Length: 405
Ligand code: ATP
Ligand code: MG
Image 1 (cartoon, rainbow, N blue to C red):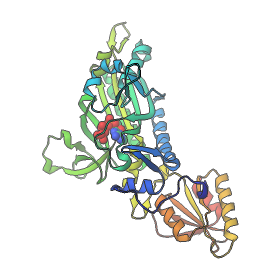
Image 2: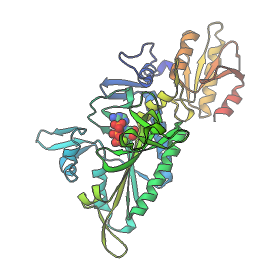
Image 3: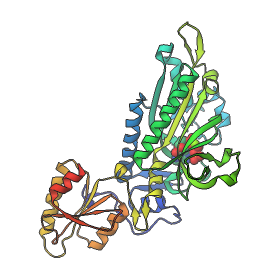
Image 4: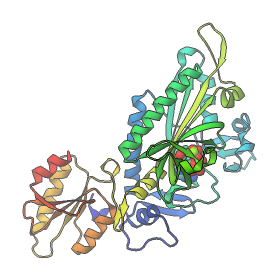
Protein backbone atom coordinates (compact mmCIF):
# COMPACT_ATOMS: atom_id res chain seq x y z
CA UNK A 1 0.00 0.00 0.00
CA UNK A 2 1.37 3.40 -1.01
CA UNK A 3 1.18 5.92 1.78
CA UNK A 4 0.10 8.57 -0.74
CA UNK A 5 -3.07 6.51 -1.32
CA UNK A 6 -3.70 5.40 2.26
CA UNK A 7 -7.00 6.62 3.73
CA UNK A 8 -6.81 8.57 5.96
CA UNK A 9 -3.42 10.10 6.78
CA UNK A 10 -1.87 10.31 10.25
CA UNK A 11 -2.59 13.45 12.24
CA UNK A 12 -0.50 15.55 14.62
CA UNK A 13 -3.30 16.33 17.08
CA UNK A 14 -5.11 13.94 19.37
CA UNK A 15 -8.93 14.26 19.44
CA UNK A 16 -10.35 16.62 22.06
CA UNK A 17 -11.14 15.01 25.38
CA UNK A 18 -9.24 11.78 24.63
CA UNK A 19 -7.58 10.42 27.76
CA UNK A 20 -6.72 6.80 26.94
CA UNK A 21 -3.77 5.77 24.78
CA UNK A 22 -5.94 3.71 22.43
CA UNK A 23 -8.28 6.65 21.82
CA UNK A 24 -5.49 9.15 21.14
CA UNK A 25 -3.21 6.88 19.12
CA UNK A 26 -5.75 4.90 17.09
CA UNK A 27 -7.46 8.14 16.01
CA UNK A 28 -4.22 10.03 15.28
CA UNK A 29 -2.67 7.14 13.38
CA UNK A 30 -5.83 6.73 11.27
CA UNK A 31 -7.18 3.37 12.50
CA UNK A 32 -10.58 4.51 13.80
CA UNK A 33 -12.97 7.44 13.49
CA UNK A 34 -15.75 8.41 15.87
CA UNK A 35 -19.24 9.00 14.47
CA UNK A 36 -20.90 9.69 17.84
CA UNK A 37 -20.44 8.56 21.45
CA UNK A 38 -19.61 4.85 21.46
CA UNK A 39 -19.77 4.45 17.69
CA UNK A 40 -16.69 3.99 15.52
CA UNK A 41 -15.70 3.40 11.94
CA UNK A 42 -12.88 0.90 11.56
CA UNK A 43 -10.83 2.68 8.91
CA UNK A 44 -8.79 0.56 6.44
CA UNK A 45 -5.83 0.01 8.79
CA UNK A 46 -8.09 -0.59 11.80
CA UNK A 47 -10.05 -3.13 9.79
CA UNK A 48 -6.79 -4.89 8.83
CA UNK A 49 -5.91 -5.25 12.52
CA UNK A 50 -9.37 -6.53 13.50
CA UNK A 51 -9.30 -8.94 10.54
CA UNK A 52 -6.00 -10.38 11.84
CA UNK A 53 -7.47 -10.73 15.34
CA UNK A 54 -10.52 -12.47 13.81
CA UNK A 55 -8.32 -14.82 11.79
CA UNK A 56 -6.45 -15.93 14.93
CA UNK A 57 -9.75 -16.54 16.72
CA UNK A 58 -11.21 -18.41 13.74
CA UNK A 59 -8.16 -20.69 13.45
CA UNK A 60 -8.19 -21.65 17.12
CA UNK A 61 -11.96 -22.21 17.27
CA UNK A 62 -12.09 -24.24 14.06
CA UNK A 63 -9.26 -26.38 15.48
CA UNK A 64 -11.57 -27.51 18.33
CA UNK A 65 -14.47 -28.26 16.01
CA UNK A 66 -16.48 -25.01 16.06
CA UNK A 67 -18.45 -23.97 12.97
CA UNK A 68 -18.74 -20.38 11.74
CA UNK A 69 -22.06 -18.92 10.57
CA UNK A 70 -23.84 -15.55 10.64
CA UNK A 71 -27.04 -14.63 12.51
CA UNK A 72 -29.43 -11.67 12.15
CA UNK A 73 -29.00 -8.51 14.23
CA UNK A 74 -32.66 -7.49 14.45
CA UNK A 75 -34.72 -9.84 16.62
CA UNK A 76 -38.46 -10.11 17.30
CA UNK A 77 -39.64 -9.18 20.80
CA UNK A 78 -41.34 -12.58 21.16
CA UNK A 79 -38.09 -14.53 21.28
CA UNK A 80 -36.74 -12.34 24.09
CA UNK A 81 -40.00 -12.79 26.01
CA UNK A 82 -39.43 -16.55 26.09
CA UNK A 83 -36.60 -16.11 28.59
CA UNK A 84 -37.92 -12.91 30.17
CA UNK A 85 -34.95 -10.93 28.94
CA UNK A 86 -37.08 -8.39 27.01
CA UNK A 87 -37.80 -7.07 30.54
CA UNK A 88 -34.76 -8.14 32.57
CA UNK A 89 -32.18 -6.92 30.05
CA UNK A 90 -34.19 -3.88 28.91
CA UNK A 91 -31.59 -1.49 30.26
CA UNK A 92 -28.86 -2.69 27.92
CA UNK A 93 -31.06 -3.62 24.92
CA UNK A 94 -32.01 -1.20 22.15
CA UNK A 95 -35.72 -1.83 21.64
CA UNK A 96 -37.61 -0.34 18.71
CA UNK A 97 -40.91 -0.36 16.83
CA UNK A 98 -41.43 -0.40 13.09
CA UNK A 99 -44.16 1.54 11.25
CA UNK A 100 -46.64 -1.31 11.87
CA UNK A 101 -45.92 -1.09 15.63
CA UNK A 102 -44.14 -4.43 15.64
CA UNK A 103 -41.42 -4.52 18.30
CA UNK A 104 -37.83 -5.58 17.80
CA UNK A 105 -34.51 -5.56 19.61
CA UNK A 106 -31.09 -4.88 18.16
CA UNK A 107 -28.79 -7.74 19.05
CA UNK A 108 -26.78 -7.36 22.25
CA UNK A 109 -26.09 -11.14 22.33
CA UNK A 110 -27.50 -14.28 20.67
CA UNK A 111 -28.34 -16.98 23.27
CA UNK A 112 -32.05 -16.93 22.43
CA UNK A 113 -31.39 -17.04 18.70
CA UNK A 114 -29.04 -20.04 19.00
CA UNK A 115 -31.45 -21.88 21.33
CA UNK A 116 -34.17 -21.34 18.71
CA UNK A 117 -31.89 -22.82 16.03
CA UNK A 118 -31.09 -25.76 18.31
CA UNK A 119 -34.71 -26.61 19.10
CA UNK A 120 -35.51 -26.53 15.38
CA UNK A 121 -32.53 -28.53 14.11
CA UNK A 122 -31.30 -30.77 16.94
CA UNK A 123 -33.50 -33.78 17.59
CA UNK A 124 -31.25 -36.60 18.74
CA UNK A 125 -28.15 -37.10 20.91
CA UNK A 126 -26.45 -37.86 17.57
CA UNK A 127 -26.74 -34.16 16.67
CA UNK A 128 -24.73 -33.20 19.78
CA UNK A 129 -22.34 -31.73 20.77
CA UNK A 130 -22.65 -28.67 18.58
CA UNK A 131 -20.58 -25.47 18.64
CA UNK A 132 -21.42 -22.53 16.38
CA UNK A 133 -20.09 -18.99 16.30
CA UNK A 134 -20.16 -15.75 14.38
CA UNK A 135 -18.39 -12.44 14.19
CA UNK A 136 -20.87 -9.60 14.20
CA UNK A 137 -22.00 -6.29 15.59
CA UNK A 138 -23.44 -5.99 19.09
CA UNK A 139 -25.57 -3.07 20.20
CA UNK A 140 -25.62 -2.16 23.89
CA UNK A 141 -27.12 0.85 25.54
CA UNK A 142 -24.03 1.62 27.60
CA UNK A 143 -24.55 4.58 29.92
CA UNK A 144 -20.95 5.73 29.67
CA UNK A 145 -19.28 4.70 26.43
CA UNK A 146 -15.68 5.68 27.11
CA UNK A 147 -12.05 4.70 26.86
CA UNK A 148 -11.90 5.08 23.09
CA UNK A 149 -12.76 1.83 21.35
CA UNK A 150 -12.77 -0.14 24.62
CA UNK A 151 -16.46 0.50 25.31
CA UNK A 152 -18.81 1.17 22.43
CA UNK A 153 -22.60 1.21 22.05
CA UNK A 154 -22.00 -0.63 18.80
CA UNK A 155 -18.96 -2.92 18.67
CA UNK A 156 -17.71 -6.15 17.18
CA UNK A 157 -17.77 -9.44 19.02
CA UNK A 158 -17.04 -13.05 18.28
CA UNK A 159 -19.70 -15.07 20.09
CA UNK A 160 -19.61 -18.84 20.28
CA UNK A 161 -22.39 -21.08 21.60
CA UNK A 162 -22.16 -24.77 22.49
CA UNK A 163 -24.87 -27.38 23.10
CA UNK A 164 -24.35 -30.71 24.82
CA UNK A 165 -26.15 -33.91 25.77
CA UNK A 166 -24.79 -33.89 29.32
CA UNK A 167 -23.35 -31.58 31.92
CA UNK A 168 -20.06 -33.52 31.86
CA UNK A 169 -19.72 -32.96 28.15
CA UNK A 170 -20.41 -29.24 28.59
CA UNK A 171 -17.79 -28.95 31.34
CA UNK A 172 -15.16 -30.73 29.23
CA UNK A 173 -15.82 -28.47 26.24
CA UNK A 174 -15.88 -25.35 28.42
CA UNK A 175 -12.32 -26.22 29.48
CA UNK A 176 -11.34 -26.79 25.85
CA UNK A 177 -12.63 -23.35 24.86
CA UNK A 178 -10.85 -21.86 27.85
CA UNK A 179 -7.58 -23.37 26.57
CA UNK A 180 -8.31 -22.14 23.03
CA UNK A 181 -8.90 -18.64 24.43
CA UNK A 182 -5.51 -18.74 26.18
CA UNK A 183 -3.91 -19.73 22.89
CA UNK A 184 -5.74 -16.95 21.02
CA UNK A 185 -4.70 -14.29 23.52
CA UNK A 186 -1.12 -15.56 23.63
CA UNK A 187 -0.88 -15.24 19.85
CA UNK A 188 -2.26 -11.70 20.09
CA UNK A 189 0.41 -10.85 22.68
CA UNK A 190 -1.54 -10.64 25.96
CA UNK A 191 -0.51 -11.88 29.40
CA UNK A 192 -3.97 -13.08 30.45
CA UNK A 193 -5.46 -13.42 33.93
CA UNK A 194 -8.28 -15.94 33.90
CA UNK A 195 -10.61 -14.40 36.46
CA UNK A 196 -13.58 -15.85 38.31
CA UNK A 197 -16.50 -13.43 37.96
CA UNK A 198 -20.26 -12.82 38.04
CA UNK A 199 -22.56 -13.40 35.07
CA UNK A 200 -24.38 -10.04 34.71
CA UNK A 201 -27.64 -10.29 32.75
CA UNK A 202 -26.54 -13.72 31.47
CA UNK A 203 -26.52 -16.05 34.49
CA UNK A 204 -26.72 -16.15 38.28
CA UNK A 205 -23.75 -18.54 38.33
CA UNK A 206 -20.07 -17.68 38.14
CA UNK A 207 -18.30 -17.13 34.84
CA UNK A 208 -14.71 -16.91 33.68
CA UNK A 209 -13.31 -13.63 32.41
CA UNK A 210 -10.11 -13.13 30.43
CA UNK A 211 -8.47 -9.98 31.77
CA UNK A 212 -5.46 -7.97 30.60
CA UNK A 213 -3.74 -5.68 33.12
CA UNK A 214 -4.01 -2.00 32.15
CA UNK A 215 -4.44 1.18 34.19
CA UNK A 216 -7.36 2.34 32.03
CA UNK A 217 -9.24 -0.93 32.57
CA UNK A 218 -12.69 -0.56 34.15
CA UNK A 219 -12.45 -3.79 36.12
CA UNK A 220 -10.58 -4.39 39.35
CA UNK A 221 -9.23 -7.88 39.78
CA UNK A 222 -7.62 -9.41 42.85
CA UNK A 223 -4.52 -11.44 42.09
CA UNK A 224 -2.79 -13.89 44.38
CA UNK A 225 0.75 -12.46 44.39
CA UNK A 226 3.23 -14.32 42.21
CA UNK A 227 0.49 -16.30 40.46
CA UNK A 228 -2.15 -15.84 37.76
CA UNK A 229 -4.98 -16.79 40.16
CA UNK A 230 -7.48 -13.92 40.00
CA UNK A 231 -10.97 -12.94 41.12
CA UNK A 232 -13.14 -10.08 39.94
CA UNK A 233 -13.66 -7.62 42.79
CA UNK A 234 -17.45 -7.94 42.26
CA UNK A 235 -17.50 -11.49 43.62
CA UNK A 236 -14.41 -11.52 45.84
CA UNK A 237 -15.13 -12.90 49.31
CA UNK A 238 -11.64 -13.60 50.63
CA UNK A 239 -9.15 -11.62 52.63
CA UNK A 240 -8.25 -8.70 50.40
CA UNK A 241 -4.94 -8.10 52.19
CA UNK A 242 -3.50 -11.35 50.82
CA UNK A 243 -4.34 -10.33 47.26
CA UNK A 244 -3.10 -7.56 45.01
CA UNK A 245 -5.75 -5.29 43.42
CA UNK A 246 -5.03 -4.36 39.79
CA UNK A 247 -6.97 -2.56 37.07
CA UNK A 248 -7.73 -4.71 34.04
CA UNK A 249 -9.58 -4.81 30.71
CA UNK A 250 -11.99 -7.71 30.14
CA UNK A 251 -11.30 -9.02 26.64
CA UNK A 252 -13.24 -12.25 26.87
CA UNK A 253 -15.90 -13.94 29.01
CA UNK A 254 -17.24 -17.49 28.99
CA UNK A 255 -20.56 -18.59 30.50
CA UNK A 256 -21.60 -22.15 31.48
CA UNK A 257 -25.40 -22.03 31.65
CA UNK A 258 -26.38 -25.66 32.05
CA UNK A 259 -29.91 -26.71 31.03
CA UNK A 260 -32.08 -24.33 33.07
CA UNK A 261 -31.59 -20.71 32.08
CA UNK A 262 -32.21 -21.09 28.32
CA UNK A 263 -33.01 -24.70 27.32
CA UNK A 264 -35.80 -25.20 29.86
CA UNK A 265 -37.41 -21.82 29.20
CA UNK A 266 -37.30 -22.24 25.42
CA UNK A 267 -37.96 -25.98 25.13
CA UNK A 268 -34.49 -26.98 23.95
CA UNK A 269 -34.95 -30.80 24.00
CA UNK A 270 -33.27 -33.78 22.34
CA UNK A 271 -33.81 -37.54 22.60
CA UNK A 272 -31.09 -39.59 24.29
CA UNK A 273 -29.91 -43.13 23.35
CA UNK A 274 -32.99 -44.64 25.00
CA UNK A 275 -35.37 -42.24 23.29
CA UNK A 276 -35.90 -40.22 26.48
CA UNK A 277 -36.58 -36.50 26.01
CA UNK A 278 -33.92 -34.37 27.73
CA UNK A 279 -32.88 -30.74 27.93
CA UNK A 280 -29.72 -29.61 26.16
CA UNK A 281 -26.84 -28.18 28.17
CA UNK A 282 -25.79 -24.77 26.93
CA UNK A 283 -22.83 -22.38 27.18
CA UNK A 284 -21.71 -19.17 25.47
CA UNK A 285 -18.32 -17.59 24.93
CA UNK A 286 -17.54 -14.00 23.88
CA UNK A 287 -14.49 -12.04 22.74
CA UNK A 288 -14.84 -8.33 22.00
CA UNK A 289 -12.68 -8.05 18.89
CA UNK A 290 -12.70 -4.25 18.63
CA UNK A 291 -12.01 -3.98 22.37
CA UNK A 292 -9.09 -6.39 21.83
CA UNK A 293 -7.57 -3.95 19.32
CA UNK A 294 -7.85 -1.13 21.88
CA UNK A 295 -6.41 -3.30 24.64
CA UNK A 296 -3.40 -4.19 22.44
CA UNK A 297 -2.68 -0.46 22.10
CA UNK A 298 -3.02 0.08 25.87
CA UNK A 299 -0.42 -2.63 26.46
CA UNK A 300 1.85 -1.89 23.49
CA UNK A 301 2.68 1.81 23.03
CA UNK A 302 5.25 4.42 24.02
CA UNK A 303 5.27 8.22 23.92
CA UNK A 304 5.79 8.17 20.14
CA UNK A 305 2.97 5.86 19.20
CA UNK A 306 1.71 2.30 18.86
CA UNK A 307 4.02 -0.77 18.88
CA UNK A 308 1.98 -3.55 17.20
CA UNK A 309 2.84 -7.18 17.95
CA UNK A 310 3.70 -8.88 14.63
CA UNK A 311 0.63 -11.13 14.81
CA UNK A 312 -1.89 -8.27 14.53
CA UNK A 313 0.09 -5.46 12.86
CA UNK A 314 -1.73 -3.83 9.91
CA UNK A 315 1.37 -4.35 7.71
CA UNK A 316 4.58 -6.32 8.29
CA UNK A 317 6.94 -3.51 7.27
CA UNK A 318 6.86 0.23 6.82
CA UNK A 319 9.14 1.10 3.90
CA UNK A 320 10.35 4.70 3.78
CA UNK A 321 12.31 6.39 1.00
CA UNK A 322 14.51 9.41 1.72
CA UNK A 323 15.47 11.38 -1.31
CA UNK A 324 16.66 14.75 -0.15
CA UNK A 325 20.05 14.47 -1.79
CA UNK A 326 19.87 12.34 -4.97
CA UNK A 327 16.85 11.08 -6.90
CA UNK A 328 18.34 7.56 -6.93
CA UNK A 329 16.63 6.34 -3.79
CA UNK A 330 13.16 6.73 -5.33
CA UNK A 331 14.03 4.17 -7.99
CA UNK A 332 15.54 1.89 -5.37
CA UNK A 333 12.44 2.34 -3.16
CA UNK A 334 10.15 1.26 -6.02
CA UNK A 335 12.35 -1.76 -6.63
CA UNK A 336 12.34 -2.85 -2.97
CA UNK A 337 8.57 -2.31 -2.78
CA UNK A 338 8.05 -4.51 -5.83
CA UNK A 339 10.39 -7.22 -4.55
CA UNK A 340 8.85 -7.37 -1.06
CA UNK A 341 5.27 -7.28 -2.35
CA UNK A 342 6.14 -9.99 -4.88
CA UNK A 343 7.38 -12.17 -2.01
CA UNK A 344 3.95 -11.84 -0.35
CA UNK A 345 5.10 -9.39 2.33
CA UNK A 346 2.59 -6.77 3.50
CA UNK A 347 4.23 -3.38 2.96
CA UNK A 348 3.15 0.14 3.78
CA UNK A 349 5.32 2.18 1.41
CA UNK A 350 5.89 5.84 2.23
CA UNK A 351 7.00 7.28 -1.13
CA UNK A 352 5.72 10.79 -0.34
CA UNK A 353 7.90 13.88 -0.79
CA UNK A 354 8.10 14.78 2.89
CA UNK A 355 10.94 15.30 5.33
CA UNK A 356 12.63 12.34 7.00
CA UNK A 357 11.47 13.74 10.36
CA UNK A 358 7.82 13.70 9.33
CA UNK A 359 8.02 10.25 7.76
CA UNK A 360 9.77 8.72 10.77
CA UNK A 361 7.32 10.34 13.19
CA UNK A 362 4.41 8.80 11.25
CA UNK A 363 6.13 5.41 11.19
CA UNK A 364 6.58 5.50 14.97
CA UNK A 365 2.96 6.64 15.46
CA UNK A 366 1.45 3.94 13.19
CA UNK A 367 3.64 1.36 14.92
CA UNK A 368 4.35 -1.28 12.27
CA UNK A 369 6.94 -3.64 13.84
CA UNK A 370 9.69 -3.12 11.23
CA UNK A 371 10.79 0.12 9.56
CA UNK A 372 12.88 -0.14 6.37
CA UNK A 373 14.67 2.88 4.96
CA UNK A 374 16.05 3.29 1.45
CA UNK A 375 18.28 6.32 1.02
CA UNK A 376 21.45 7.57 -0.70
CA UNK A 377 23.33 6.11 2.24
CA UNK A 378 21.92 2.58 1.88
CA UNK A 379 22.35 2.50 -1.96
CA UNK A 380 21.14 -0.92 -3.16
CA UNK A 381 20.74 -2.13 0.41
CA UNK A 382 18.12 -1.34 3.07
CA UNK A 383 18.23 -0.04 6.64
CA UNK A 384 16.21 -2.22 9.07
CA UNK A 385 14.91 -0.92 12.41
CA UNK A 386 12.57 -2.65 14.83
CA UNK A 387 9.88 -0.33 16.23
CA UNK A 388 10.70 -1.37 19.80
CA UNK A 389 14.50 -1.03 19.53
CA UNK A 390 16.90 1.85 18.95
CA UNK A 391 19.56 0.21 16.76
CA UNK A 392 19.57 -0.16 12.97
CA UNK A 393 21.20 -2.62 10.56
CA UNK A 394 22.05 -2.35 6.87
CA UNK A 395 20.88 -5.46 5.00
CA UNK A 396 20.71 -6.88 1.50
CA UNK A 397 17.16 -7.02 0.15
CA UNK A 398 17.37 -10.83 -0.02
CA UNK A 399 18.10 -10.97 3.70
CA UNK A 400 15.12 -8.68 4.44
CA UNK A 401 12.85 -11.01 2.48
CA UNK A 402 14.29 -14.06 4.23
CA UNK A 403 13.47 -12.55 7.63
CA UNK A 404 9.92 -11.64 6.73
CA UNK A 405 8.51 -14.61 4.84
P1 ATP B 1 -18.34 -5.11 30.51
O1 ATP B 1 -18.34 -5.71 31.88
O2 ATP B 1 -17.01 -4.56 30.10
O3 ATP B 1 -19.48 -4.16 30.28
P2 ATP B 1 -19.70 -7.43 29.69
O4 ATP B 1 -19.23 -8.34 30.75
O5 ATP B 1 -21.04 -6.82 29.78
O6 ATP B 1 -18.61 -6.28 29.48
P3 ATP B 1 -19.92 -9.63 27.86
O7 ATP B 1 -21.36 -9.74 27.71
O8 ATP B 1 -19.19 -10.56 28.73
O9 ATP B 1 -19.54 -8.12 28.26
O10 ATP B 1 -19.32 -9.57 26.38
C1 ATP B 1 -18.26 -10.38 25.89
C2 ATP B 1 -17.10 -9.51 25.46
O11 ATP B 1 -17.49 -8.45 24.61
C3 ATP B 1 -16.44 -8.80 26.63
O12 ATP B 1 -15.53 -9.67 27.28
C4 ATP B 1 -15.75 -7.64 25.95
O13 ATP B 1 -14.54 -8.07 25.36
C5 ATP B 1 -16.70 -7.29 24.83
N1 ATP B 1 -17.57 -6.14 25.16
C6 ATP B 1 -18.61 -6.12 26.02
N2 ATP B 1 -19.18 -4.92 26.06
C7 ATP B 1 -18.48 -4.14 25.19
C8 ATP B 1 -18.60 -2.78 24.76
N3 ATP B 1 -19.56 -2.00 25.24
N4 ATP B 1 -17.72 -2.33 23.85
C9 ATP B 1 -16.74 -3.13 23.36
N5 ATP B 1 -16.59 -4.41 23.71
C10 ATP B 1 -17.45 -4.92 24.62
MG1 MG C 1 -18.38 -10.01 30.61
